[in-house]
Image 1 (cartoon, rainbow, N blue to C red):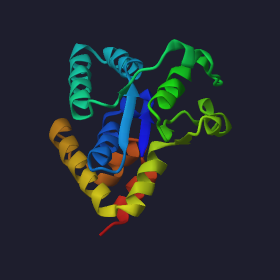
Image 2 (tube, rainbow, N blue to C red):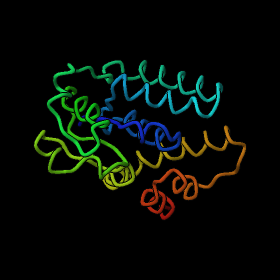
Image 3 (cartoon, helix red, strand yellow):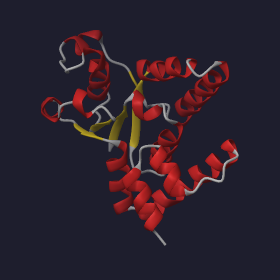
Image 4 (tube, rainbow, N blue to C red):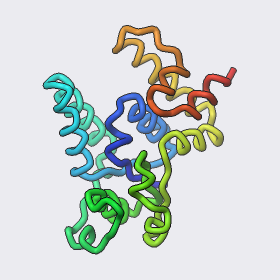
Length: 182
């Protein structure tokens, strides 16, 4: 399964770590475009030069890990598409060009299911998507989450617990599921 990642699911660190960790475990193949990555890097600029450098490094590691993930498309493809927010048509164009099965986004309103269905695509939010993978492969997702938790503790110097960390990352269903796991 190929899934295009919208900028809004790449930019929050813990969310990105969970999504890419699950992808790295083989649950799906992530896709993005150069424009999506550039939107992330542009957003990181607002946090300062250190955050910008970190984002650029992480983007380079993503490109190295998934060299086939970056999708290109002709401007004519984007020109023929319609979404409620014209600024999002590049995401839909990348999903089509990459032969994605769906788009992972927090912007449900900007990606109507009926419009996506016309292109053979579905839309999912990261929490529901990861929760669904957890239902099918709980050990795999739990292992990724443990790794993300360990990294968050190390980088933030805080003693994070799984449930608050994932809830803060806008993954409340997954947080509840993993918090209830033995």
